[in-house]
Image 1 (cartoon, rainbow, N blue to C red):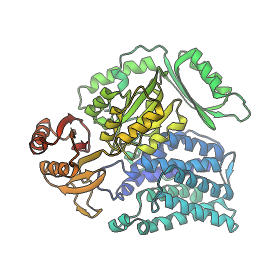
Image 2 (image 1 turned 180 degrees about the vertical axis):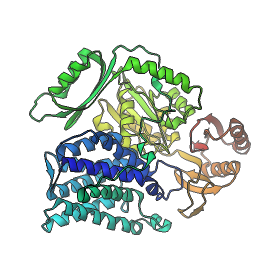
Image 3 (image 1 turned 90 degrees about the vertical axis):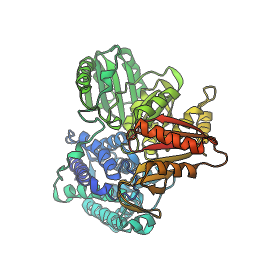
Image 4 (image 1 turned 120 degrees about the horizontal axis):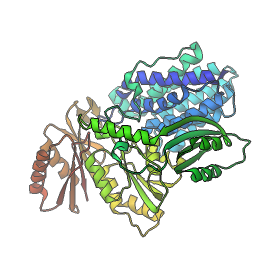
Length: 561
């Protein structure tokens, strides 16, 4: 058996180990397009838990697992990060109410985590992190069935199974075998388990040797704060946040806490997540909020900030920042303030680029979350955007396949009704917004909006981030990559030729409209020249529109209808 302090140190060690090795995990990605890489997403996800655990002392194993699962849920980024959070969610359920970890509840924890992860994926693919975790759980269960009573031995068996399954991933996924690599997510999970074992077996916390491991969703010093740009009246002085670890013997409901907080402040958010209550309120009396919260259970992660002081500092920082080179849009931070719903429907859109942000805003999006291919926002980023949208039902448009799962994790912990549309590209998000009908209900709109982009053809032009032999294409790093509906279509050296070939492959006899969205690495002159060339070649068949999206990574995003 091992106690809560040991489990805490093991998780911190696992987080440090994946941080130290995240580039090696990133490099296992076989898809040549620049993306929110697996190692980076897993590292940022679990480090959200490590930061919270750093101040936890003498908690039980069950309490440590619960804190970890809650932090991972909020910090989950990308599909690999979400799956990692779900696996640790199983640990929280398996260790619930336990002061120490036994062989039996460790085996149960793996089982519950694997069930949660498989259940969250619409079409589970073997040869991925799912397989690695499943086999790890099977080895743990077999050890217990064979009479093993030492939790350390069971953990070692789980890691042994994970490594064996990882080595087999190329046999299950031909694309891995052809590239000569194992699955990136599976490797990341093994790295985390190895970091944990260092503590469980030898009592050694692996140190964090990666400066990049300190990346967080708080952004760097050069990022401009939206708080400094917003000139609004601050009604209450103190932004007060805390988490209540619910006392099972207290019969009071979270609604009572919400009702009290609404009498002493505004921007109240009370989210009930089974074993915890997450609280946010703006008030002049933070002590009263804390005292009332204590009547529901123990408090952790308390934070009180003077918003008036913050606002003045932000204004000062932004004044100075304006004299420097601005941060890239995808790295800028947003400050979202929870609001009371004032209308039936609202929209949260994820995109990167000032032009795209303006476009979605003009189409009716209430809140924009900066993010996309190379920077996947966390579940907490999306949750905060939802809570700052003044609507009873909030539609979320991820506009990227690697953000959908993180968005869906916000559904059960939001105070609003949340509908996540499975928009995988920017054009799909735009089309969905155009097909919203304010006179229809939420479910009717969800179906209509999703159907609207079902037959939309999307093209993208980017660059190869790595040498690759992918899907029958020999690709060299730096070449132009043309993607058709998310799949590599061809490579090119010349941007103009690339665009003409891609458009030709996208149009058919029924096509009527072509939209070209150019990114931050394409000058207006270049964009206009390509627009003119395409208009000359296809203008008699298509109505062509050129938009300055300002997006990173993609030189052009195209849609044909």
